[in-house]
Length: 74
Image (tube, rainbow, N blue to C red; front, top):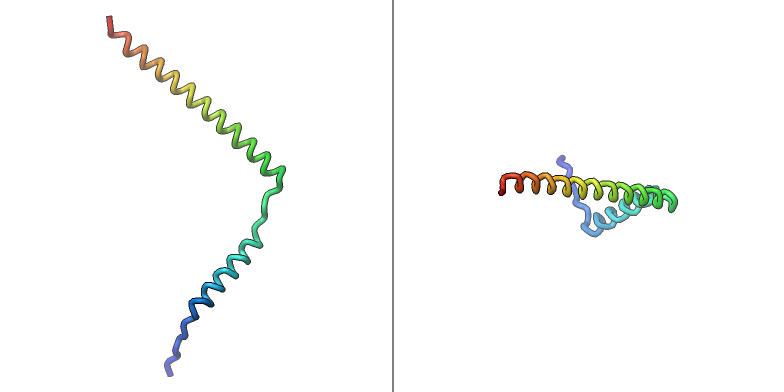
């Protein structure tokens, strides 16, 4: 005999999905306040250093372009 497969009710599927979501959320290990503060400090320093590097590179390339452009003009 052929077995008939029964479909789950759509509301049971939705309920199962949310139950599994709650189970996964319970497994999360949240960082402490001190860890978050340290990470924020590191990110802030990296952003400042990268910004200064890009600013210096921009100024240097602009000065080099200005030097090349004004050399040929009399």
